Length: 274
Image (cartoon, rainbow, N blue to C red; front, side, top):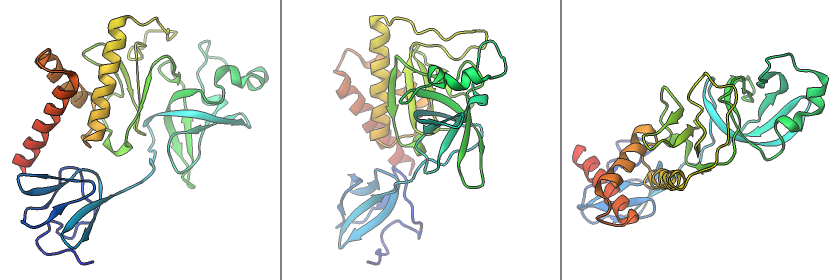
């Protein structure tokens, strides 16, 4: 069906969260849209679909496209030919070769290492790695040469849409509340008390969590999930912005009410800017 002239499409095919779809009267807000002050906005990334006066957005479902140097979090799915096959949410296969892994003693890999690959990474293990190269067939080669990479455990894993992740200078981050975050370019985020931001360590220790650390990680996870649900970009700045807002307002209201207020204010600001 032809989109009517008074829709704000301007012939563009893809709409982002917060994009204005229509400011004319008579239109109805449908799936993946919302209405504010008589205007209809997109609430997700996708293409517009109109049936009579009903306006909807069809979400774009696209897989992660790795680029060299990006930080990813993935799960080991198979071991073969001196390689681990890793699921990083890409449409192409990602592999980690034995020679691309880190050993504290910095020695050459041996046949014993090949025989004992499962002692390094086993099936279903979560790992953090860097994209080393992308081949002509779009298959991906990873590496974990460095202490900050490797197996990750004893933390909170959060999955978000990869296109919401903001590319920034650092993706191994210590937040203001002392929660350590790995911000994967592929939409996987890992929260823990394990500091991977320093280079003078020889071992990453898994420490027991204090009650406050558990609370801080849970709240950081909630803030990240609300950013995802409201289709806001996810970065150190945006997460800390939510957490700071909650910290300043408490204990006036419960956590959920406060965070809903935060996103309501942010959407109002977006509309004013438009």
